[in-house]
Image (tube, rainbow, N blue to C red; front, side, top):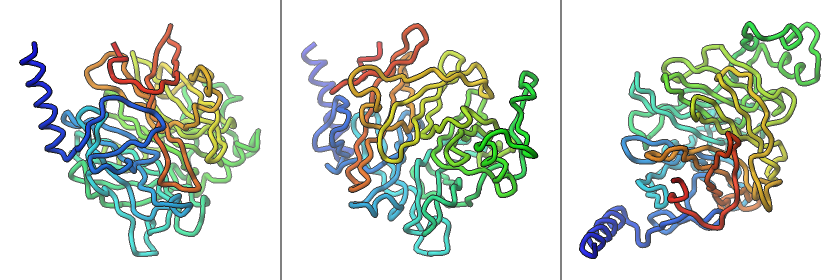
Length: 368
């Protein structure tokens, strides 16, 4: 046993040293400074993590100091890890452009980048929320970029508002009262949707989800952030097919994170209070096309009414463990954007109810 322990320790030491780690992490400490292999706080805000060939890749917004850091001055940062505790800096995956006429010009707003792999095209596809330079949050566009290698460089392709000229998808169970009538919108929120039909629907906070059958879906806050839209992506993941639904219309949900467990679809999001935290919310559906049922606040305990100071960005399935999902959230600091912190907490399922509880520190042994 002693010999085996010493060999295992030596292997781990060699692994960390080979990737440039001076000191390894063996647990998560939500809200603390989280250093990469260079001893620098990880700079991947509003991000998501994907697993590819046994390695995790974390993509997120690269921030700089001060309020200026709330705009895109550098681009989208990438990190990689074999154990989720220790992250290697892989550099900038998508760089902003020095051409001020570019949609992704330096100083534009690039938020919540998510990367997925298309097995058919063998391309890595990045989607993100984009606001054009100098327009604050008026553009409300979706941006897409593509790469041959997971770490990039990613080539920016286009940005636009999704699904112009189209109405939501309705199934045979949708009542006439639930169908949108743009000749006479029933509510102010319906009016926002109808207003934007010709130019496409607003798309802000977002995520991308790939189902078991390889189909991909884009989930985003729309209609002045009052309603979520879930839209099907084309087979190459580079555009929308035109099939989409509205979720929780008129109830202001943003920061969506979508995942699947036991044949059911789950979604975690937040209310809309700017940079300030609020109570998380979760939804459940037996079909990706709904109906989606609002289930309340998944957080419990002290600080749960404010999601422990954070806001959802992604739900990460842990490879090799059953029912193991990590709730990823950002603790924003808009006055000094680079100092944003990460809150990673374990998700627990009790009688099919989703629970998130605060832990000062924890590790993957939490998932049995």
